[in-house]
Image (cartoon, rainbow, N blue to C red; front, top):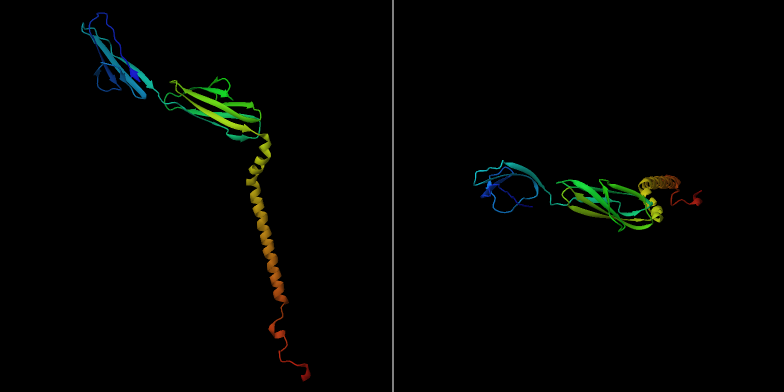
Length: 211
């Protein structure tokens, strides 16, 4: 930011001006100088060759060159026509002063410090452009894009219920696996009991004629 100091004297004689920035040493003013972004204190004083001296004066100067940041939602597909648009803005220097909103390329309207908008939307694609202004006049815009599609509610409902359904499915599969394992174990045990033991079998050289 450029700073220019101007002084006048009723005597019409030569004028000298001194200035100090943020409590630093005094410098004789010769030409326009620059201040960086931030808050500054400028002290200044003038006098002329006739001996007239101006009382020392001081001014606080806030310089904000950075635009605010703004974000908003929703995005993607929404399954209901009643949609609330929300947004937030931040500015670390001079602070947010106001917001302006434009819907689907329509005229821009100032909404003050309001950070939400609720209305019924038609099916299809929509855009909401939110512009945030800070106290220094800097601005930044966020375009919120979403699609209203009530027909997608069925598919989205399935995906939304998956976290609840998956544990139940896993439990059923586990119980089925346990029942199958126990049935297989019982069958193996029955087969083992059905096989004759070696002592119960007749000798291989036994002949009925020996009787």
